[in-house]
Structure formats: structure tokens, C-alpha cells
Length: 337
Image (cartoon, rainbow, N blue to C red; front, side, top):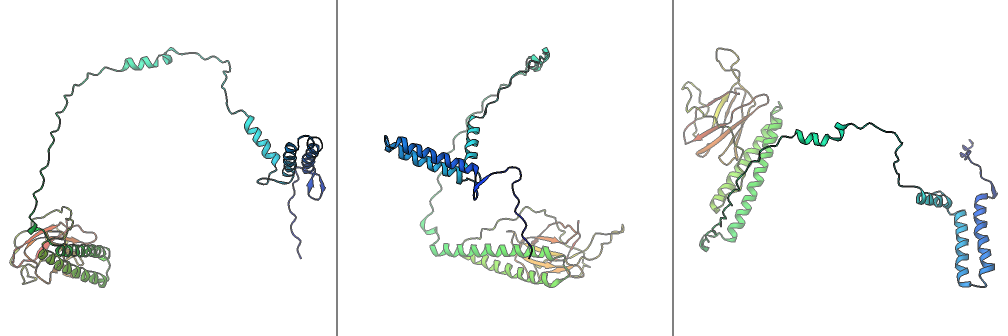
């Protein structure tokens, strides 16, 4: 069996042990406390017992504490010495000149006056005080008659429909973000599923908006940011192949920039995501171009003004504004910037 490694001992200082682990220093502290208590018992107890007994007990306890009661692994005499050193050590330092003399420079002593003389006086500008702003007391709004105020049921239904419209708008925004994240992925199954969900949310939002119009309120939808509007030619050449025969169906062809100086357009762009917004900024259609660069809606849109945004990695497109008036639209020929 291997023997245990010996415990390191204190080799810098040696302490004499009298009985067991009691050192000479501990014995001296214990003897001083016990001796003082004995002297108090012999000489002071017969005369002043009420004073002698507390002093006798305190002396005995101090002797035992100094001998056998360390604090933070240090004896009480160490803490007593540290206390008196902290109390009586000097804490205030006084600087005394060493007797060396330095030459004084007149320019250094007069540096403040030199700075003031270098400043040029600037003419003060008199500014006439502005006239006080007149107080404008706003007129109180006219009180509506009680017959025009909506009922509690109408207000509750309006709030419920507005909450549904906000939830649908949030889902539509999430679908648009998902489309922008996976539009570069060659797997078309994911983006087709997202676009299907987007069309479902758009149709539900249209139904909620119609119900709000019937109740008399409109959903509080934040307007979209200001977009660049590009004027679209009214019609293209008659030789252009029609992609749809239904009115108010936005369709078009997206091709790359002309790569040759002859002016012919480049190759068709596949996988371009086309999102159609209404005048309130709500997406109403989400389309995607095929291998021929063509996109077309499946159902007609109501008459009004719409905005068309196109997205594809590596390309930048203008934002188009389209006015629908119940006519069959010719295919739009769109090229990137």
C-alpha cells in the first residue's frame, strides 16, 4: 500500500509545543488571562465584588480568546496589531520643497494677458425679439346626433373584424418573407406551398374587408412606404401573344437586359416573384414566372389602382403602377434596371 504524501510544514518559523498542540505563545496568553483573573479575585473581590467579578470574567475570556480563538485563520493579536497600525499610521502626506530653484520665464507668467490681447473684439449683433405667438383656442368638435352613433354590437363586430384583418396582414407579411428567403432555392415545392398560403390569406383578407365595409368601418392598416411609380405604355404591339382573355388580369413577360448592341432583349427570366398590391398596400396576388418568363393571374381584379413589385436575386426592377378599368390587358414586357 502506498504511503500518503507528507503534509507540508512551516519551515520559516518554529513554534515550541508544550502540551499537545498548545504552543508557548498560546500558553503565555492563557497564563496572562488566568493570572490577571486570580489577582482580581484575591485583591479586588473582597472589597468591590460587583466590579471584580465582571473584570475577572472578561480577563479569563480574553486570555482564552487570544490563545485558542482565531478569526479568519489568524489569531486575535494579529488583528489587534493591524487595528492599531491602521489607526496610528499617517494618512496625510505633506509636500516639502527640496530647495531647488527654477528660473522663471516672463512669457510664462504673462501667458493669460497675452491670450486676452490676441483676441479680437467682435461687434455685437442686435437681434430683435420675436413677437409673441398668439394663442389659438381650438373650437370644440360638433356633437353628433345620437342616431348616427354605432351600436355596441356594431362596435364589437368592427373591433373583431379589424383584429382579424391585422392577423391576416401579419400572416401575409410572413409569407412574403418566406418567399424572399426561398426564392433562390431550386426546389419549387416550398415556394409553391407558401404562395398558395399567401393567396388564401389574401382572399380571407378581402372577405374581412367586405364585411367591414358592410358594418361601416375599415381596418386600420398602415400604408405602405412611398414607392417609385413608373408610367406604363397603354398598349403593346398587336403581334404580342395574349396570355389571357379575361379583363382586369395583370400579366406580362420578364426578360433580361439586351446583351448585344442590336437592341434585342435577353433571355427570359424564370422564377421571378411578382406581388400585386392594392391602393391600401395589401397584397392581393402573388405570382411567379415560368421558364418562358411569363406570369399571369387566374382571376380578375376589381377596378382600381394597383402596384406591381418584382423580386429576384441579382436583379433590380422598377415598381410599376397599373390602372384597371375593366379591359383586357396586353402582356407587360418588363426588363430589369
